[in-house]
Amino acid sequence: MEADARPLLAQRRKAALRFEIAHEAVRMFTSQGVTATTGEQIAQAVGISARTLWRHFPTKESCVLPLLTAGLDFVMDQLRHWPAESSLLEFFTDICQIGRLPSTTPVILDLIRMTSTDPALRSVWLQAHDDALPVLTELLAQRSGASSDDLRVNVHAATLNGALRAAAEDFARRYAADPEASGSEITACLLAALRAAAEGLPY
Image 1 (cartoon, rainbow, N blue to C red):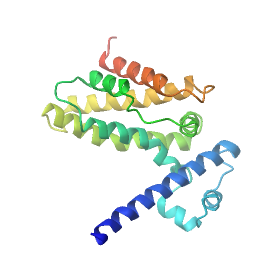
Image 2 (image 1 turned 90 degrees about the vertical axis):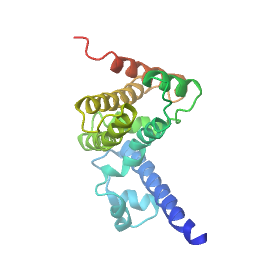
Image 3 (image 1 turned 45 degrees about the horizontal axis):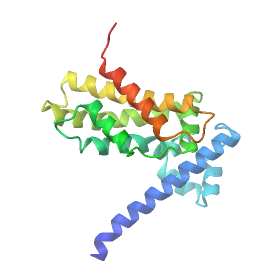
């Protein structure tokens, strides 16, 4: 029993350290700029060696990845429990109504806003969504009974992925001056993006 718990404990410690590094990286990027910040400075602020930091992240910009993937991980976890009788929009509306969306901190909003101006951070943000795409594709394939290689399933997954990214960016941009914005504002941005995705291409 104790032996079985060790890998899980180690995994939790690793995840906690990665999030600590990510928070510190955003704080330093915000206060002194991405270019002026080094990986060594981030490591020192966290209290670890640079070597340890580079074991977790290949670049200083990639240190923020855990914060950028948190929302996507939440969505994919929720989709695994998507009731058969609900449409995608109905499902997310229900999630929003019962307050199950994860809280969004000013740190994450600062980070998402920085991805629009810093090319290296933009690359990490886009990579987070690119990494999520195969998982979303597989979830939609299972839902529809089609193959994950099916073109329609891939287009639907890409559309959902894009809507989630657009919603996050819209929320971060529109509420930059309102650090208290959360629940209802996040809900409005997410549902608006999903409704736009559900419309298809009306051009």
